[in-house]
Length: 182
Image 1 (cartoon, rainbow, N blue to C red):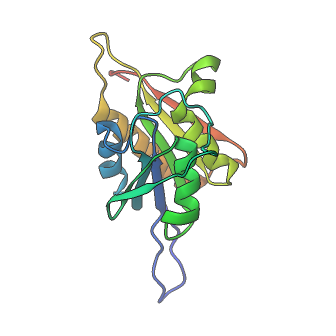
Image 2 (image 1 turned 90 degrees about the vertical axis):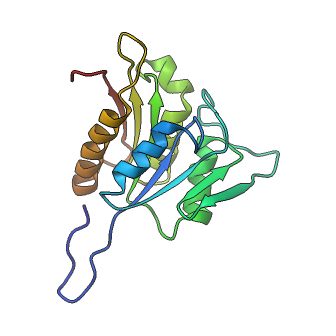
């Protein structure tokens, strides 16, 4: 959380950027957006459609378009890495204090998952640009369901810790939240 400043000055709320590889409209990012607003000013800058398995691809040979859906939600015709770059350079009012990519409905556990994952790539792009970043994925229960609200609460707790304590330079958190009970 932001530290109090000198008497007579306003406390700056943390700015949190959300992205994913499933699209701005996905339930998981919307629930996460609502839950993380308790920690600070929260923006979504995410693909306009699913971009799973896009890894760290960036768009070079075609124009990128960005659409304001509402004041804190933007859809980009590009990959999660494009979204992070666009958010930091064109959309956000200032540099974010934290980037959260996800919550991905499905795990990102092994080397193959992590190397291809657009969710993980969104967080890696943030780390490359010097912003503390984390990717969050949900594991399904035995019936194939995802505990989205529980995942959002666990993510909020981790985000609060990262905002308070930071991350070592060059480190990206890759969080996989198991199905309940945890």
